[in-house]
Amino acid sequence: KWDALGWDWQPAIRDRDMGITEDVFLSVTNDIEIEDLYITSNLNLPDTTTAEIVISANLVNHSDFEKEGVMKVLIQNGNDEIAFEEPYKIESHSVKEFYWDKNNIKALRIQDAKLWWPFGYGEQNLYTATISTTTKSNEDAAVSKTFGIRKVETYIGAKERVYKINGREIY
Image 1 (tube, rainbow, N blue to C red):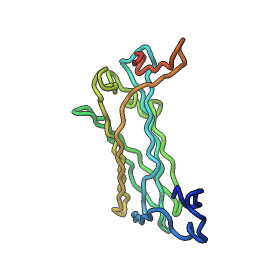
Image 2: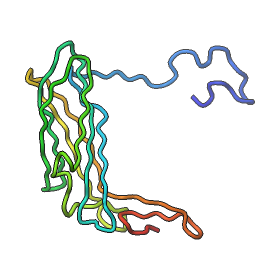
Image 3: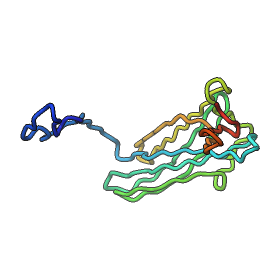
Image 4: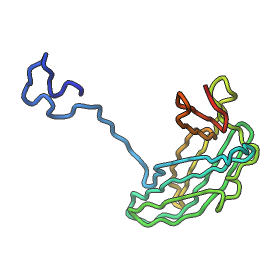
């Protein structure tokens, strides 16, 4: 913690920072696990009628056996949905990287995307991405993340730092 070594108002005490000094957590996973889900969006400004989504994730096989299954991706915003699947085979004790963008999944180029805007400038539209998998031996894993589609830019103006969200200056 912040006072582990002592200050001028507190004399140093031997062994004060020995042992566990922070919270400890235990977690349990199945043999198959989805990690490091990362989602980013790109707007080709000044055109805000289309947005491109890029998704990456790692599939980890903690078991001693090769696994086969299907990765399923579902992106939702209200009634709008994008869904696709990718079959996989993963060796024991290994990590398989998945990367999806407009080049391998055409639906990740979204027409009329619902953009996220700061409060007072528009709606704070959010999408939910859920990635799940089930192996042929019925082991499953899933992870979800909520994200907004936006482009944030900043630069030093004449007298102040300027922020632009989706191409519009924000004050």
